[in-house]
Image 1 (cartoon, helix red, strand yellow):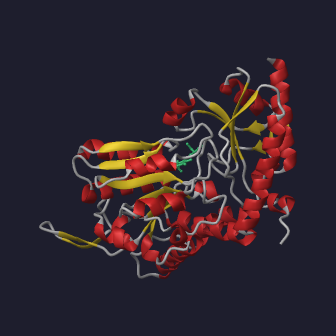
Image 2 (tube, rainbow, N blue to C red):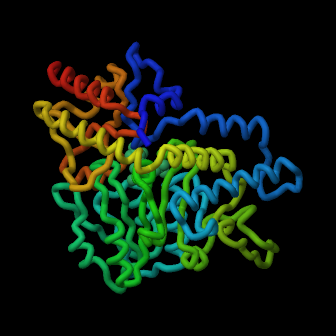
Length: 405
Ligand code: C6P
């Protein structure tokens, strides 16, 4: 199938907006993606025509809303190729998925003197929840170092894994460097020592086909809003045998089987981890977004974005004073850069005046910034609707700003 980016763009009304009288060039997809009409319409339609609380009512609307919600779980299962819908937990996003896991896993599995391994390129949400748990439990955080190119030092990982290591937590794609980590290999090495692995898929799921059975990871987290779905919904995948062993994260309705003041028993999977009314409108809209990208074909999206990234790297490297952070052999649609000594905030603000939306700052990865010896970068991140003409606009914008300084 030919990937027709101009046709695809018609599904995203916001892309025809003008910013300061110029066509919007949206290159902040790593922070959040824009939503296709289909996703917004699914939400409007559900609120207008179906809305009722799920899993509770015998009435028609409640059953219809429940059916949509549970069908969405099946869509997520299929999308990441989990074995069963029992393994798909709905959360508010990657951050909540990791907090859930860090809490529950910590309660059941971590004791004083144990260790948790993360990588040097993690987002704060795959560092801080583990750090908080380690503080509670008297455990230690250990860090997989990275090379100057921005790749994981796999040999160093070997040295970090031992009998006190309880879990390894690693991102599949860096939100700063665009590095695609060899997570399957990380899982293989950890499993040799029976250590489970969490993969942070926030930046991979929107860009590549993910198969959790092929990766063989024990846990996998991602956010709906980064994959063209709504805000406020995300997923934690966990292998059933693990989820069965872990205690609930929050208490409340839905997660219980029976409650008495003496003793409460918990619901079966996945509901044991889903206290309270879920955002069932968002889960349905997330499923709509996953159907949308599946309809375009993840392999077509990946090919389009890879070509765009190659083109952008080629053009950007020709800009005088350009420094691009990270030079991993396998990389994704994220380019972090700095030009001469122009402050990233100045660059971001001036690009904005040209209608170009990029992100600036530490990108919620302060330890990585420290490793790179910088305070922040400008980051352009591409999505399925971006075009070479937009890359040209970025390059011309940067050139123009460079000449001003
Ligand atoms: N990164 C960025 O601009 P939430 O906020 O829960 O949807 O996702 C958190 C998260 C976790 N892991 C990675 C690798 C991420 O990139 C993010 C979010 C955004 O880079 C916002 S800081």
